[in-house]
Length: 412
Image (cartoon, rainbow, N blue to C red):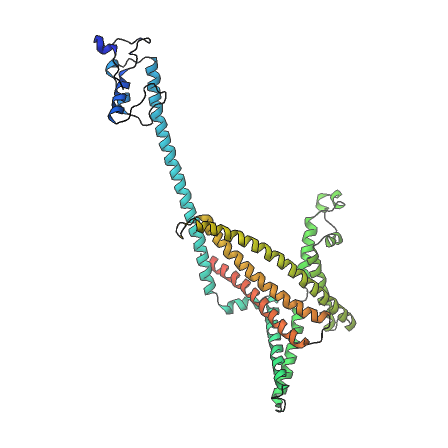
């Protein structure tokens, strides 16, 4: 870049003001700026309207041509642009600093959230280890459903034992061995115990229709029919029969099945006639068969939905693993996907348990409904014991989870 000469240097006057038509119009500040740029190996066009990004001391120092601070119009605009560049750079630095601080706060919040979630999972696992089986069984037998499952386990365990005992005594090897008197008495007592537990379970399941009835009445209070909409606001309520008709079919099936079971139980204790009890038993068996089929259909639909969600989460985790992320560099989304995958796998496992239990119920109810005689005692005993074990395991896990969460709250 060629040097620029000024009239003040040529004529020795520091107060002379350049003309706008003069070729030596620019002040000495640009001379210093150009000299600094040349010294640093970078030359800047003085005619460029954009100021330098970083402020330079030579650009603000008074040049030899304006020693008394006399600035023309263009020089005033240039000085303003230099000041605005300083302000702009400071604002950029402040905004970048605030952005970095904000990102740091977000990272800290994500780390704290991940730490809290991991700590909660660890506390829950530790609480599950501290919960004893005796405590879970104690909580189970406090409810009628838990006592029903406990009695069912004992009842069908006895039936399976009697099944194998009778098969051994009637076998060819042990057929000629005489049976001892205490053994005959013991078998009679076990048969009496099994029948007594069956009757006790029927008594425990009395008034089971209150559950579906509550669901119908809650839907009745939530909905408003067109006829009741004309009434005052406090009296707007759907009639019970209308709410019963619009109730979901599984709810109606549970309601009818529970009522027929109660009628059969009342006939067994002598409050109703035997003929009414037999009809109620047949109707209850048909309701049980239909509800089991409906349960299998719902279970299949839910398992397909859980399977689709599980495939989506696994595909996201696979894509994340293909990026080369390690366990320490995983993002929050990957950690959430891992937790979601564990939850879906657990849910799918218990759905498979429920499906197997429903299949056992389907076999048992089919023998009762269609009066199948071939291997009836063996099939009903084995399927009843399998259903009792599976349903008891589900209820046991439910109470264990409840006790673990309660223990975590007490430890906090």
